[in-house]
Amino acid sequence: MIQFEGLPVALLKVSPTGRVLMANQAARKLVKLEVTANTEMTHLMEGLGRSIEDWLSEASAGRCAKHSEFLLLKREDREVFVQVSLNRVIEGDEVSLIAVLSDATELKTLEAQFVQSQKMQAIGQLAGGIAHDFNNLLTAISGHCDLLLLRHDQGDPDFGDLVQINQNANRAAALVGQLLAFSRKQNLRPEVLDLRNTLADLTHLLNRLVGEKVRLSLNHDPILRSVRADKRQLEQVIMNLVVNARDAMPDGGEISIHTESLHLKQNLTRDRVIVPIGHYVCVRVLDQGTGIPADKLQKVFEPFYTTKRLGEGTGLGLSTAYGIVKQTGGYIFVDSKIGQGTCFTLMFPVHEQDERPVAVDVVEKPLAIADSVSGIVLLVEDEAPVRSFASRALRLRGFTVHEASTGEEALDLLEDESLAIDLFVTDVVMPGMDGPTWVNKARIKRPDVRVVFVSGYAEDSFSDRQARIPNSVFLPKPFSLVDLTETVRTQLTLDHEMVS
Image (tube, rainbow, N blue to C red):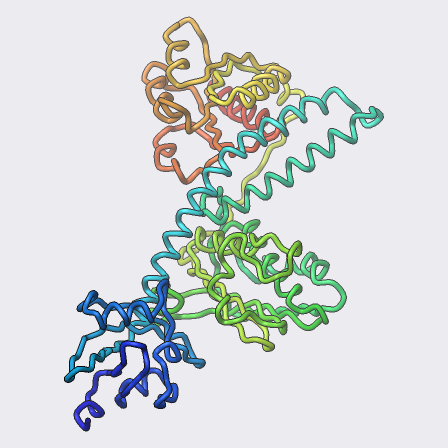
């Protein structure tokens, strides 16, 4: 009895029915619950997917020797998992079980994190694929709507309906952008930013977002270094966090945004993430709201998960912020206590190079000269509605257009050496031969033809291959009639300038 009590291993002696006969000091310390003569094993822990009574019955009969189970202790202070191994003991005519308990909290936490990581990756891939298909549909919808708007003026009774279609297509495009942001497959246009200026420019809009009940305060580090990020997307992150903070304070309060420089002299480990040593710019968004329960805290970045009431949130705001911050190379953390508010912390690596915008003298050309640019375009797009819109849009602007639905068909057209082509406009991802592949083959004989790549996927998904193709630009889907024609005109204008 003395040896059982003093052993450093947590041990329970249990009857076949589940009543705890003895518990040593290490076991009582681990379960942190009172163990009496009437204590059942089910009072101390609960099964994960199976009945504890069935498991004990099998072990007593000798049918699951040396088999262990992971169980959750019914502690109130924190979540603790234990790995329990049962050993059958026969004392005379009585059968009992010795349960060996070991703390498996860290192991189960790592397992849950791995499963969560796999789930988030799968959702991200799904979101990216769906967004690509939707971008093709939205390009066709908004594009053909643009073509209709060209034939209707404001006095036309159909004009208002067409504008509504166009506006809702743009709203759908914004939603697709959120999916791409979560899956980290959106197109970013990074630039060197001083976050003090970025937040100052955003203050007016933020004050309108928070309303009259909520006060907004900004506190800046006087010496704040630059970061490299997409300004528009970073503003979206701040707006999402501020809107969430506002919604957490229905009776009003204060939202504080703090910026500071942070130098990590050793790796920072928290929330499954290791932030390496270095200089960072830190942005904190704090509210005085209701707070987030501890069991829901790590789920707030999951897509379509929301703590708001039904109909009050899509669950995409924080997942979008998460995706943008991660794609930018930064980190986002959340701390919260019920009744004490929430703090979101953003950490961005300092941009070490002294990269400043270079002033470029822009010489504006008369509109007549710009409109006079024409050329012969080879349009390659596997989606028939997108190809139909793009070809009509370009022909309306005076370009000659040859169409192909695949890269192979485009190369067959180019076999005719008498066919003059000034510009390739091609989708990136297509069945069979993709855009960069057929363009590289075509440029063996036509090395000077400029290229416009279009895609519903992010530019960085093929940016390395595009970088090896000179005189090429990228146009993300969904694009409007103006986006397409201006991009084509710019490429052809550059080509004409080089020739002249």
